Amino acid sequence: MNGLPANPSLDHLTTEAINPRSESIDTLSSVELVRLINEEDASIAAAVGKESEAIAKAIDWITGAIRSGGRLIYIGAGTSGRLGVLDASECPPTFNTTPDMVIGLIAGGDSALRRAAEGIEDLPDRGVDDLKAVNLHEQDVVVGIASSGRTPYVVGGLNYARSIGARAIGLACNEQSPLAAAADLMITPVVGPELISGSTRMKAGTATKMVLNMLSTGTMVRLGKTYGNLMVDLRASNKKLVARTRRLLMRLTDLTPDAADELLVRCDGELKTAVVCQRCSLQPEHARRLLREAGGQLRLALESATGSKP
Image (cartoon, rainbow, N blue to C red):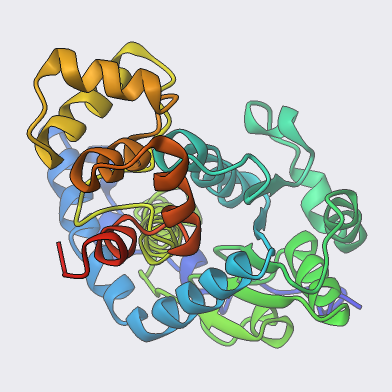
């Protein structure tokens, strides 16, 4: 089921190769060490950039899935799993998504976020079990994250996703990996050997974080969670975000601080609703209806109400 050899060799993996630039890393001064790490990191963006078309296709798939009632589910082990959980956990406060719209699964469960549970990553059935536990269905998109491209927990999870008709996307930093055989689409930023051989929390981890940023942010923009580059669908869950909501409302309307606060109270703190109310002279419920009809996209709701592009 997992598509992996019984005793897989890691010798062919780029992420396990020896980096000649760091063979004497333990003899460097602190400033030399920092400069070397920085020089290596400078190549990561280019590696991610080469995967632009695959990342864009993934964004289209995820956007379509969520619009149809599906979810984005990340699954990974170790650093890869932690990065997926991080990206998922940041979506609700940033984009006002429900906690189940973007889900992060890590081998070993939440305790593995702080304490390594390395042995579980070798069990493909655990990946299947974790996806079943969140009731994976065919409308969902699963992104399997594994820098090596061969983590059994992730490969097993993607195989299961495909078996029930869910779209399976692989994210790895090695080409021609077992993960590719389990995925409908691969994103493969090849960042080369790590400065500390095999330490994929470094360049591979940075590349993974960059790709996940693109997947979630790109999807949320496509779903109308922003207006221009403004976070108009944020959840004002603390003083900083309350202040940001007021500031954005003032920027998008002609309201004073006190008037902005009053309108936000009337709109239950919903920034997009408040903007439509003020700019289109509507009551909150009418504004909410326009936003629902526009699929939550503020720009389309304003165009619908005014008959022109805002």
